[in-house]
Image 1: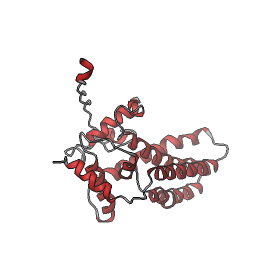
Image 2: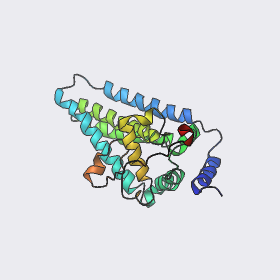
Image 3: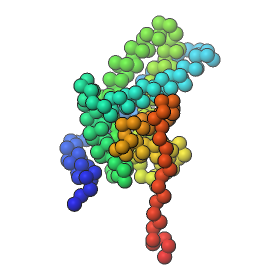
Length: 228
């Protein structure tokens, strides 16, 4: 009998449109995001030293926002966000379970990356109005803030994809990603997913809100062929 996760993966993959192109998906998100960042930061001029503080503050703000969305909408069903809940808890957490945390092929990016339209919505419905409002006060702060809102989005997508890489992948061995990969694996345990490790890029909000949970990765069994 197939493992429940493998059975779900078989059903999920069968439901994906045959014309789905993972490389086009990832390229659009990255390309669109970089374009938005470029346009935002090109709108700045003669940035003052104190205005550079916008970058770390904006990224911390984005870290807080994604933490709250992940914790309260991704893992608790609300009528206005039921599609997000179904995609995240229903699909993503059924596709990736303890012992089955890696994807098999780029086509599986469909269940890791956000839909392509979401970065467009994020840029037009959230980032653009925030840029316009801040521009009335300080154009440089507005441009830096808007760029960081898109940068935070891209970092989320990249780190999340890296956290589902095979452990032997070169990127998965990088110290920062390795630590976040372990935290994310713990988050995918059913008894922890509603209460622990909601950050994807930096566990700052998990630390501040008391939801950070750490356990060292279990040692991998040695290959008996290497011992002979």
